[in-house]
Length: 315
Image 1 (spheres, rainbow, N blue to C red):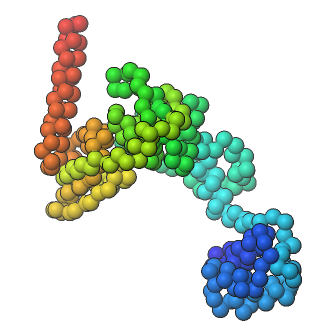
Image 2 (tube, helix red, strand yellow; image 1 turned 90 degrees about the horizontal axis):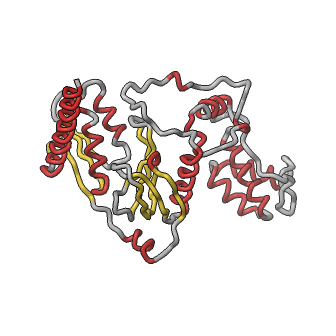
Image 3 (tube, rainbow, N blue to C red; image 1 turned 45 degrees about the horizontal axis):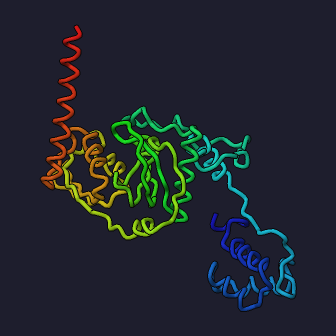
């Protein structure tokens, strides 16, 4: 596309000039500055005279343009194919309702959902077609963009309704869990909330407490674990913890040490994530985290024994 008539730097530069001319009349030095910014400085001698002398009949002598609308770039075939592909993803409806404008009946999609197989993905992912879920997602997204606190009602791990005020910082998606989570500050219940657990989400009243949310420093923690790179474990681990600051070091031929930084509010979530990889992970530091892993496994074993005994008695 470098030398394409439409998609070249020349076309892009002239389009920028016309966009500015729609806003106010242009002078020669302003045209030259735009050219130097968006193109090669040497093409000033060709573009500027062509516009000023009206060879292209795009800029009038008074510096205004004959155009009434901003110039737009036509989509390439590959762009249309890509857009058609992502429109097949159910998550697209979290961002957009009407997709008719990007429906190209004559174009084949670049890829389909059937082209991908995630072998270790859980089957209880979020329902991206649920109207309440979509509304909550868009409310959180708007709060992140415009930085205002939210009043969220959700279910805790005991299935009880709880309310919290949170200043959302970002949304994260887990491909393994097929779930969205919102991470933020201000909640006594933790810094990460699963969107699938949220019952309602409303804009919170701005108060002194909301101002304090900005000042709460993150309580940083670190965990170090070793992994054996079998069944593509290293790549899956780096993808699974993609949004956390981390460092990976090779210690042996097929052995790696991973260091991950996280917020204390996310500690329970971190324990669950690490345990989901089973024997491929071995936590080595800190002792506090090792004890959390042991305690979690102890509880799981107790639960399994309880249900086994109950089943045996029922027989």
